[in-house]
Image 1 (spheres, rainbow, N blue to C red):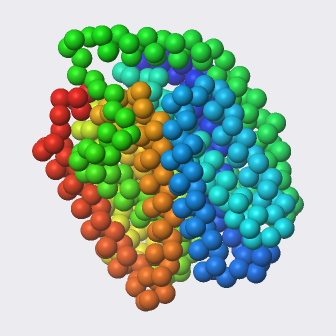
Image 2 (cartoon, rainbow, N blue to C red):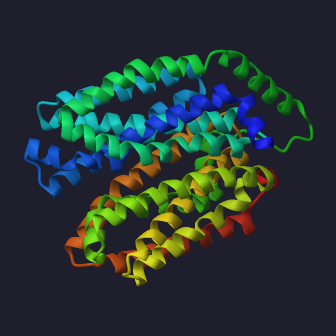
Image 3 (spheres, helix red, strand yellow):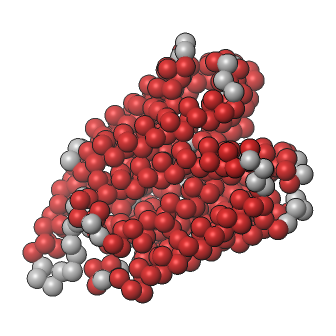
Length: 412
């Protein structure tokens, strides 16, 4: 009941977060990869050519996030959100028209920068900043927008591609996003100025409290803090592993002898598990804090990779994707809360933009790296085993932080 009342009391702002989170999906790797065959045929690109182009586009987008992401700390959220959503619209339209590879490259940069980059950054920063005691719940509720879109959009887009063509599908998306997304975002943020004023007053009150242990770290100070580098691996390793395996999902399915139809059904399990666990994890984080709970959320991913490494039966696909989705849902909620817990909210946009850029960079490098590994004869099972090692190492480093370098200001 408390959860429901929280949603009702904050329905407009949470609705804003859910909506933007829903449209994040249209710049993600799974969506762009749906058009991979048509794009390669249109521009005469090989698998390797398209993979390199995509990786470089991600690197450029990561650099852009570091620069544009920090602007959320000093720009009105209504204006910032409109500009970011406008970038998604423009990128869709450019891709629908792109006459050559340079324009294709620019469109992919825009999609990656807008969707999983700045739109994701906008939702997570604003929820972490404007909620304190119920930060976990806010991040959990708004975070289900992306997996909801992941469950619905592939079927719709595949149908549109078959009916309209791939260019017309992107044109249709751009037009619909322009008409629906930006106006609704502005409507949902009506009255945000008052919310921001109260937030500034709360910061001033905490600053004046002699007993306050909260410190507002700048991004440059964070970069000189050893704790940041102990926490970072547990945040970067899961998306690095999952993005690479998802990008090469057809090869994974074929090498294991599974059917694509069964894999598609299991992907729905990924989305459902991500939503369910995300909602459950929100109150847990509010009670115990993200710093205490984050390392436990990486455990399901380790079990998922064990299943992928040692089981060939089709049930392994279900185990892998459901546990991977559960780990993702819980981990993202905790990750987006932990920076506010440790470093405060004043410079949260600048700090998160750096982390988001590193995540995008990891996602950029993993498809190409795994592709080369497959080319050299390394098997899916061997990559899963190496990934388990990375997961274990990242968890170990986080426990070093948790039990060795944690300070009073980290505690919820």
